[in-house]
Image 1 (cartoon, one colour):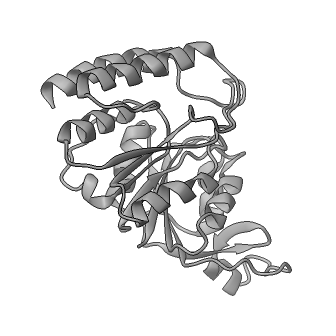
Image 2 (cartoon, one colour; image 1 turned 180 degrees about the vertical axis):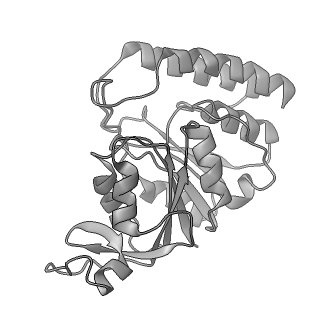
Length: 268
């Protein structure tokens, strides 16, 4: 099975190269398709993507680890990148596809674009910052590959290392998760988590409409109300960042999430 990694990107020039290297090194035996959807970045991220992988909005390019970084193979072959002087890290096939949104549309819109342009049998959502470690995919992948799960949520509340940050964020997450659990009769602990890995069949035919962080609520309500998917959770690490370090979600997104829960539960 091929794994499609869907990455919404917005102003992550300081982290994008590092997270792509981490992604390339995770699950080395699995063919990976990396879909990068730049959602109107203005900090140099778009230019870096073009320089590293070539022109955007085209077919995928082959990529490889070179001197500790993920780069397009053709840049090495055309002498646009110095060939690696380090021992080669063996991985399965890796391709990269870059898609640009001309204007910032929001995480949900970027994810929809990524889903529509992906080809893998299994998909996983990855943020472009360093809050989540792709090494945590191992347990998620094992549940899907072993035919135990159709959907696997990561959870930051199962005892794995996580940075201590904002109580109000924790409280808001618990309220949102528990309200969904109450209305949809499920037992998820962390619906606002980035890490969701799932079979393509889960989103085939699913109409997703949220453009912002409301995607987390919309996706969760729709898959739990469907009553046909095997949903699992597994613990993941969380290396959260502060607003000064670039965190984007805020209290307004929490308030909207509560409204989204009621809307999607009643009308979708």
